[in-house]
Image 1 (tube, one colour):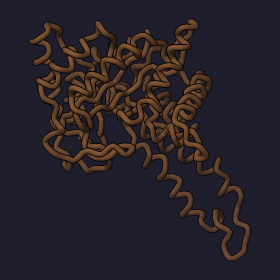
Image 2 (cartoon, rainbow, N blue to C red; image 1 turned 90 degrees about the horizontal axis):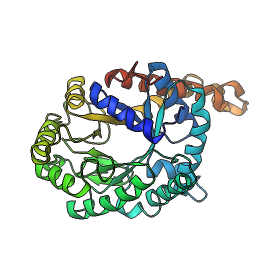
Image 3 (cartoon, rainbow, N blue to C red; image 1 turned 90 degrees about the vertical axis):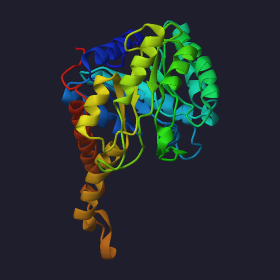
Image 4 (tube, one colour; image 1 turned 120 degrees about the horizontal axis):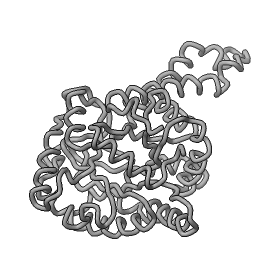
Length: 340
């Protein structure tokens, strides 16, 4: 069972929260990066999450028509086949989807899974993300209520981002300022609108200074201790201990201490994209520079097929990204925790 059933996905998240670890959620854009993520999880003996952003899905749909749903469905179906050869369990997820892309991405994908569930099958994706951080909180939560009901009916978990993450992700941009910190009032309003599990399970991407992109440690002011305040504030109001399953966005450049604090306060999923993109591309650049005379037809020569064959440098790229995924499993304490 390499692709988690709804029941197993819930078990994965419960185990992470109880064990104070989180699953790396790896953005993929191709069959190669999918295999790199699966390999990294397998080598770390960790279960994990594979995710596709709107931009990644558009790329997967092909540059002829750039259809996001086609791209996401195609890679998900591919993953259901190839993941069977890896001795770990993964969940399939879609990353950031803003309001203007819901009708062209998340809503059709929920419909695909609803149709599968109606036939007695498991959903194609195990979770989807609604990114309403550019909307008012009232509008964000109103759309979240609608999507949560649809997701729950299709046995899917919804991820919601209620306040902004700084930087840029697939065209969604937020300034780096004091708005990057979720308040207890924001969390209480979320619980009032979406419930605490009785309306369907959801993951919460709360903001504690998170910024997408590449930053050296110390350049971004993270306050992961804020997550404890959100847990306690909602717990006191509703009488449920540690009510939220948090997601850590914009983790590139985070210190190990910051990550550890986030894990202690309920983070069960941490997104990785920037770091794994670099880990995939760096070995390719190294190969091209070292073998430029074989890759290029220099001075009328024919070069070397062995060096420009995509399989040659593609294997290096896969290995580089897999290593970074395995490192993430160690940092998030998920290494060695696989279900089987």
